[in-house]
Amino acid sequence: MRGMGNMNNMMKQMQKMQKKMMEAQEELAVQTFEGTASNGLVKVVINGQKQVQEVVIDPEIVDPEDVELLQDMIVIATNAALAKIEETTNETMGQFTKGINLPGF
Image (cartoon, rainbow, N blue to C red):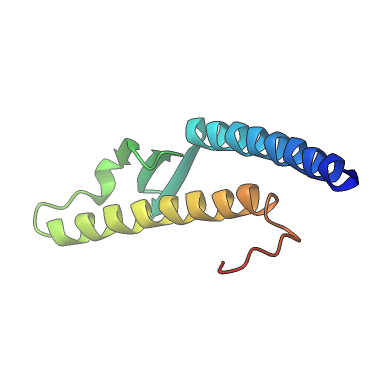
């Protein structure tokens, strides 16, 4: 019967960790991440749920003769913001899997 106490303790720890993980995910979802291009002339803000919240384009970079450049700058800024989300998510959620050896993962 001694093993049951250890099992119950482990289950409680897992439930506690699951709750902390859910809280961390909720916190990440409401954060915003900013990506920029061309020294800040193009800025994209994305939330933790990977939804674009804002695109800011400095009129200085708008050239009707070169729309492709503007499109490229938007893509660069968006990808920079998404990379920040990925990095922050990995840092935040990685704390929950440190030291855990899960077979198959």
